[in-house]
View 1 (cartoon, rainbow, N blue to C red):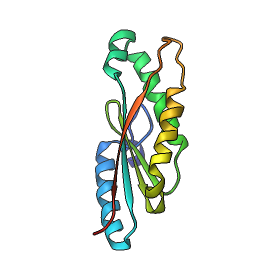
View 2: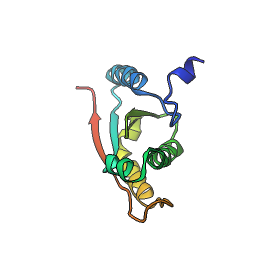
View 3: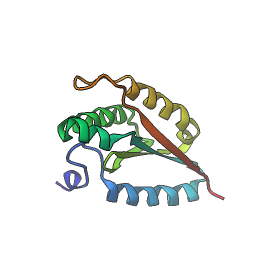
View 4: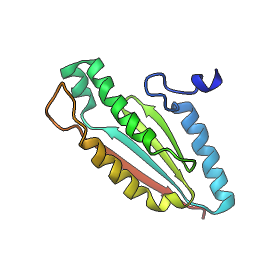
Length: 135
């Protein structure tokens, strides 16, 4: 039951509160182990326009498509969450921090190649990446 409360009902990813708590724990752990951490924030471009033009149910299809692609990349060294409306976060721990750019570029390309039955235009995402190392 607690696990369900910690997750976003729409996407099944963890929510903002769990994300913030986990990020703090991972940074503290990283300080003790001298292992790097990378944080990626993923945002769906022009998402408000999608909702306004096609409706929230179609916007939900886009959110769920991105959530599926993010979940597909899950492993024990990554923590994934829905950070806010159309924003998602991925924390990469340990040696994966060095490869986060490639991981996010692959996500960006795969999402851009998604097609939707309600529009012909391509939907894109923007991704910001920050890395942290102790010291």
